[in-house]
Image (cartoon, rainbow, N blue to C red):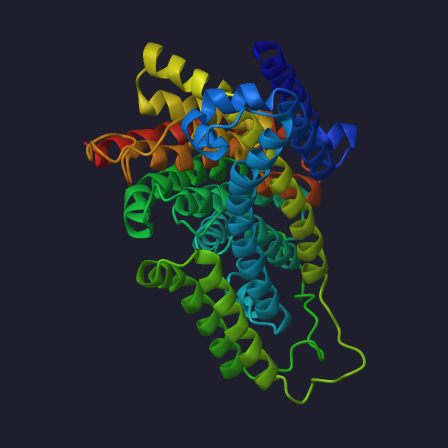
Length: 460
């Protein structure tokens, strides 16, 4: 059993290394994640009976009903009672993200976000940094941070002409998006996983993280502003298409925006009132937005040619890669959990460390090179929800779960490859890794230290 566990760990470690170096090896991380996830479960099945006796002894014995264990029984139990749980949890997160991404695409296709480029246009480079990151933080708290980065990079490129300034603002957008996504349960797939697992509630999660995240963003902006000198080199005009792809009147755009954003805000209330999965609420909001979109665009319905924006095509492609990547990662971490390896690591950490701040910081540092999605899954599976001691760091809304989200966001910003949002910003604006390490690594560390200090002060 130990040998098989080590083999599974080795397969996943090689896979994570390939995914972390996607920019240089040019192998799709989604493909690697799927291969690793399926391979891990195939290897698991070779010793499935032994692993079941270790991790699910009572449930497996009940399933057998006094019969002897057999290969057929192991396969049936694993298929119906083990793998399905990880796939179901992953699908709940993915369906939520698909729904919210589509809501944003509908809004963008109707020109709802077009005025932003005009509202935030300024020649003051430092003021533009604060406005841009503040708006990014706000949007990312309501929709996932990858979608936010794609949207804000599009807006930023409509305004800024200088490549040197673009790369600085792109890095700031990535940092603000990661921090904004970490403070709400609907802001990022990492925080969404915490909510779906049932270890946090939306209100307590937000109140526990908003001040540390804002503190980190403020410190980061203060440090980053030293890179900006003079005025923003802006385009002489905004190159936004003003044709048939956005025929709605201003009041109609406002109506769509209100329905979309307020609907997303109402999803936690929907979940609390009905106890139904959050993705059902997101799908309801999407259906409502689509109906209103169809009514407002009644004259355009049925046209043979509909102009679509690049943002929509980019977002759809990214979303499909994200779906496959997330599903593969979920399968891989699930197999690792079922071997007992994650429990073994958590027992060691509890015995020799015993501090939730250090747990979360270690996972955050690792996420800088591995990607914060698998590290969040590992951190989430390393400890069980403490339902007895309400003052525990692992109780409902305990400090560990909040720190896990905060450190995941900051760790994912350390090297830019540690989050999907960072990878998108890096690829879109051609940010070189060496340049980012030289100019931004220490700035993120300073912001991280400020966030941890603020978290400690607000959780005394």
